[in-house]
Length: 151
Image (cartoon, rainbow, N blue to C red):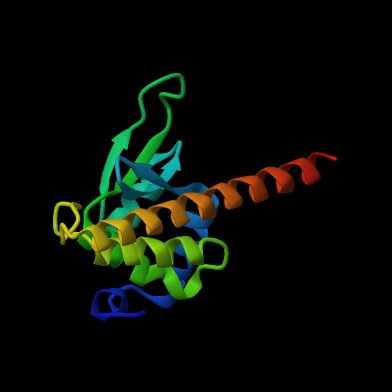
């Protein structure tokens, strides 16, 4: 899964970013597209990740937790670049990242389905459902780990 883009960044840096993503990040479904989100109270680490991989957009989160920043990776090319950079070092969210890659392959530049055939739309719908299922399992697993730590 490595490519030329990820070779510019050291293995240690990519490994660190993978661990940071698995601890402080998640994959959200916005409309019909997956979005990779990393959250942190201090924007410095998010700016550092953004500058190293040249992906995503940084924004402050609105609402009750105003001291929270997010690096959102929404563009197809950025998602693929990010995943290719960290994939070999991921342990927890590997299956979810595989599904995001598959979904990206079924979309055009703007995230819309490439083909309009019923078969292609069904395949995209099934992949999205599979991603939702994997994300739900991961959320439950993390909740159980937190409960075990509290006991």
